[in-house]
Length: 607
Image (tube, rainbow, N blue to C red; front, side):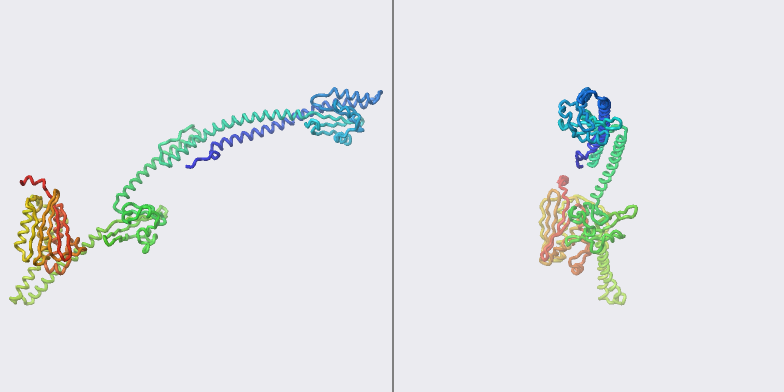
């Protein structure tokens, strides 16, 4: 999870909001206090100056209106005395100007040269003209400080006989306000520092549980449900932490259940023999198990996201919508020249309760063996029918001929009866072989085994054929001198060897040979019977042990036999724990090999 920026964190935001609120509140309070204090100080200052100005006005008025027995200089002297008695730190200068705009007196010792001269002050002219008081805050040209200028008319009997000009030092009031503002600023700074500390502490009480829940959420996203959020109180945050811990427990249980089900499903999908392919609602592959992947012979990453119709190779015949509505299974032929490979696909739709199609599941089942068995069954039935129909047809023809009077012909009747008897025996052999194969397929037989010297046993069978053979075929024996003891069912192994030697004699020409070879090792004995017959084409060698299979059917039937001898031999050798196979070169002959377990540990009983 991405780390939260410093200025984006809740803690910083809480502290900033808290500090800003306090700062705004303090600024409003300070502004209001400063304004009110400034107004009060100015009012008090003005009231103080005004009161003293009233006293000066009264004294100056008395002096200007009383009859003077002396000259005018004495009046100006008296007024100067009055003004000098009112000098203070607040009042910078007091002037008295008569109605003719002439300065009669001033309290400023540095401005005594102005006495007797005309006043050029605009406020004085305004007061004399309007007979009203003029008040103004101005900047003193000498000190560049603010002064409060008051020009008050002196009236007597309804006439303005002069004005009193007062310049007071109001800058002291503003200096007091500046000092007070500094004190307020210092107090505000101290209050802000305390506020920030308290804000951080308060914000931590809110953000710490949230940070714990955030870390727990990150851990939960990674699959770790063991951590729990610490509960710091019983307020809303504490209740949220309790609810979050409860949610963690529930998610852990749900995750455990889901993980268990996922492992079960993965195990089932991996170990099942059928292939499974799942798609999304657009028909794109989102899941495929190992058997399906092995069937398609494509890497897992190459299949994901591809349309299922393309993956199964049915995109030319079906669309995804066709597969959704498919009621019956379809067969998929992946056969090659080397081997057959047929699968049956069944489709199941993934739907929500509302009926919305969420995807499709295709289950692929290997039916190659079933198809092969079904083909073999049909071929077996056809072969049996053909094998039985041929002698029956022959017998019917001869019996019809006999029924029509041929039985009276002493020369023809015995021949017809002999053919009928031969075909009957052929049918009996065929049925016997079929019954024997049926018993072996159903395992309804037991091996009557015994320990025999296989060298002596093999020689005895070869001697029997050598004495009764009708062809000029040479028998070559490559057998060991010492005995080899094996545990076998002598009747069944005799039948196996009889079938192999009989076939070798049938297909070996006059002047040819049959070689018999026996070798052994610690585990098995190997028997080889090789003829010099016409041989078998390479593509047919592996099929000679199939039931009713003949390389040259016409010639094989003319030589007799049921076509089941080698099939019976294979079943008998398999029952003994061995195996049988053939090698052949067309035109040069065929070799039949079979193995049997070598029970060498029993040799001591026979020594």
